[in-house]
Image (tube, rainbow, N blue to C red):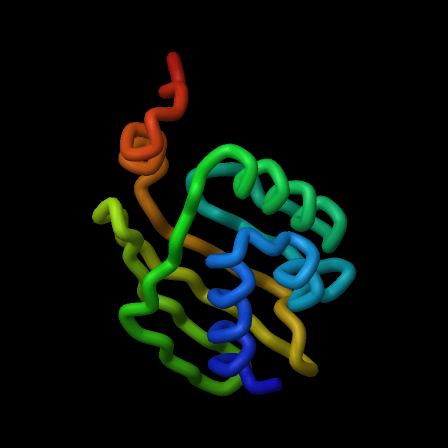
Length: 119
């Protein structure tokens, strides 16, 4: 699967809050680094992260753009509440080996009425 095709399928699984399917897009040693938090390393840890996040908030990813350049796909997204962000996916042999996401965590927490950090 090419990077752009994989990200399209990743978005479909994300929008279904399907942690089982979304996890299958990652290699065993993949890293998911959402810059608002520490990197998550390993397929099982990534699955647990998605399970927690899907349980915490109803999230929807609306694709604005998906670009592909070699082994990389870049996703520009928004959600129905107005949050925007982008993700970079490094794909080898049809699997994500590295992902980095940029978005405003404080806005996300406020929009979903979740507890705000005290620090």
